[in-house]
Image 1: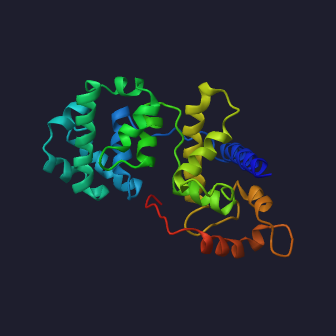
Image 2: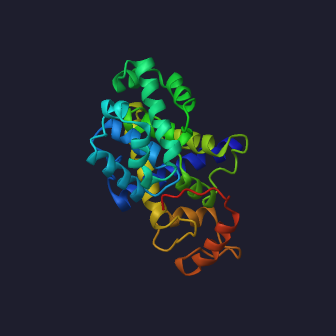
Image 3: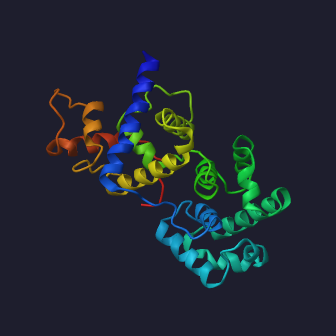
Length: 264
């Protein structure tokens, strides 16, 4: 029975992708002109809004520091000043320098060599770097290096909790459970398509998260409302409709954890 429920959760998540794709269309993520710019963005977006990251990237672009050679050469204090708009600049600047040092020492300064390393070894190596958690590591692997690694973030966590998708995964940490659920959701798709599907699915969850699944759920008009009605019928057994969604929004917000991500 438990295995059947887990399979059902994965199937529902796969259907959510289709509903979101139909509603929002292609997202064309990650917005950047190079793989290295994606890596910079993955570091800078931690605990801040993307608009702040764009200001930092604009500063780096204006100073000609959107290349590996330029980041190697720039003084740490100057780098901190350029990325100040995205916050935590005294931590993020040394973390970026540490990434470049690792790349130079272990991969001959080549992102192509980095991408060619086995993912099973590369992910732990990224996680060992200062300032790199699971989401940052997986964003680098997926978006910058094109590897089939799912990215789980706060928006996906909210969707999974509010739609009761992780009720049978208590043994996994929240991030690992979400990533595992995403892998299972796309397991039946051709392996060569996984990187593209993981990319698009993450972008689509951000799109619906910003519009409907923020700290306070706004269910009316959400492309995922039909699944929510299946997952959580009303207390009196009536079909859930936009008219009574407000009471459920309040209930969902009450039950979610205090994890927050600032890119809203």
